Image 1 (cartoon, rainbow, N blue to C red):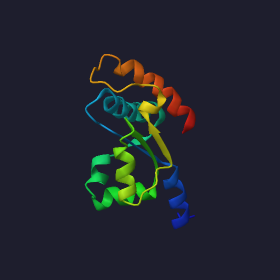
Image 2: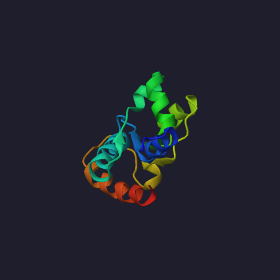
Image 3: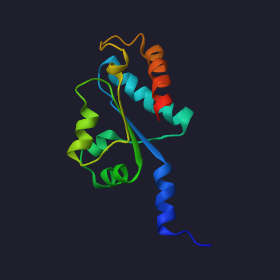
Image 4: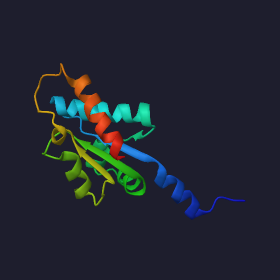
Length: 125
């Protein structure tokens, strides 16, 4: 039996893209590290938020077709704004600073804080 177009679309939708802020603060580094952990531990597909922000057609198309997880570091919400500007809605959206991690430029706690936030995100996706 052949693969129908709607069946292929349904299976594609199950794949989750994950995009994280990679800003210069601890929060940006946590967001980026979360993207890596979600790939390693949960099988999500890391994807380039900068490619969407640069309005590269294939990045936008793929982000619209697949389920997306966007992780911003802080309330500035660069990832969210990139998605809004390109008419994309993230199925799952998280802000690290909303999970009790304060913004700083000290990276000593990045690994520990990443684990704390990771556990919260996994419960929701």
